Length: 114
Figure 1 (cartoon, rainbow, N blue to C red):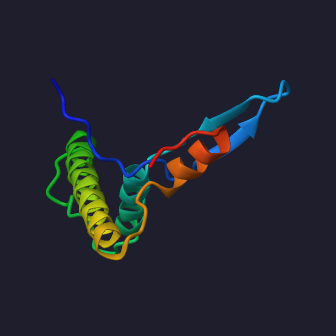
Figure 2: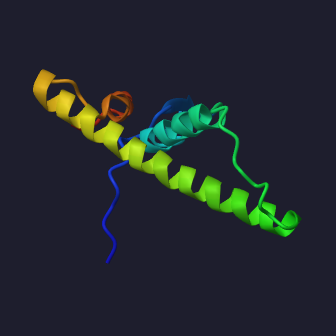
């Protein structure tokens, strides 16, 4: 049995109305994915060169790059999880609602999602 990862809810929730008047919501990416992507974008601007000078051929260079970016991707989700934890702590401390997007959708659909 797997444990659900707290993803912070939808980052860019949107409401849409069908031609028949039905309200549908699209959650889009999670806040966790958004935070991880922001970390990756910042990491990609790092000017530190990845040393592939010891690589013998293109296969070795590709393997080194693959390993490097796999580590950066893992770090991105570690950072995203830390940001979500800090966000939840601030929510508890200051009374912010962590799932504001879900609340707006639920209100628009006529139900409660607190």
